[in-house]
Image (cartoon, rainbow, N blue to C red; front, side, top):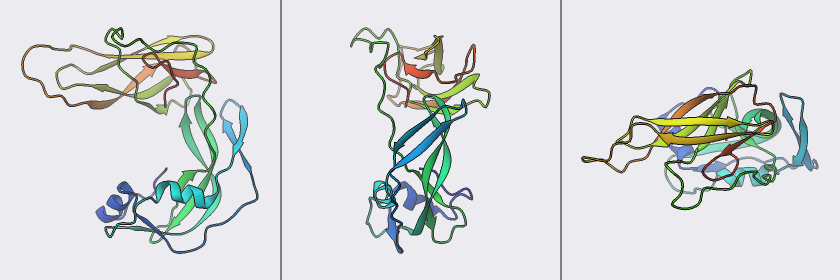
Length: 218
């Protein structure tokens, strides 16, 4: 889900969004369209089933508490840009009108594709050798020559490391930490940090894989 471009106008609205506390005052459209088109910068396109406005609304408006609430007054079908495991794509989206805001709240309106079978196996339990999971993809460079991913590390190390193995079909990312220290007191917190990974050639249609899980990076 993508927030209004203007940002939240108050801490109360920000809290309502974080707690998914919404109220509907208006009618949501129905549509006869059953498929939407996903377009990648490479020119590749696929058709995916379209989610109705009501179902999209119900996917994020799951709180009915008495706390701060955001009011949805309507919606229209439009498009938005998102980051996928194959790079940036333009996809159909429901643009929900919020009371008091000039720009909409956007919710992707197509179901994700079924994940392909991974060409690598997940690391066996106890044999990860220091590997950590790549939490998610957070950005792709305009020219596709680098990706930014969210990796994790602890309080007693020097931060995350993410290395890459490239093939013609995939880009395998394997995360670890630098300077891990075993002695002395250490808290058990898990810290997330963005890491930029340079590629030999543009990502294009290649799939991003996590070496620990053997699955596409979310």
